[in-house]
Image 1 (cartoon, rainbow, N blue to C red):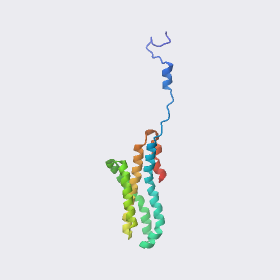
Image 2: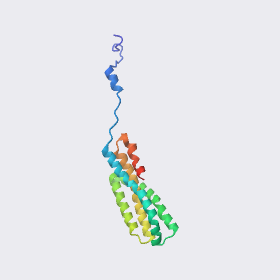
Image 3: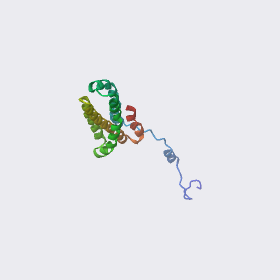
Length: 169
């Protein structure tokens, strides 16, 4: 009985226990709901690229209609990134206050209002106000989408799902 290990205080390991320790864990199933929500939330990040692309095509007509010079056009086009930075800094606190999902909704409303301002602008100052409002909204959307994706995704696929907003930019 010296081989059993019970006499000298040692613990014996039975073959059934040994197999349970070395059992290969199964891959966690993908959460389709989290995947769908992450994809939809990430589409709001696409608005930054859309806003830049639309402005590049509209610059010819804006320059002719508002009679602005090249420096004003450069400022008009380039200032969106600065406004997005301001929006993303504010969005973190707003997201803590009202929640991530409602931050994305608020971002889309702000972008819509900014687009209306830009669409109905009659002078350069009004156009810059619309660009400022839309830039704040785009910053909100980028920050809100990343936060929302990080919170809704399971731990096994969090890195994959939080990279979606970068893909849609």
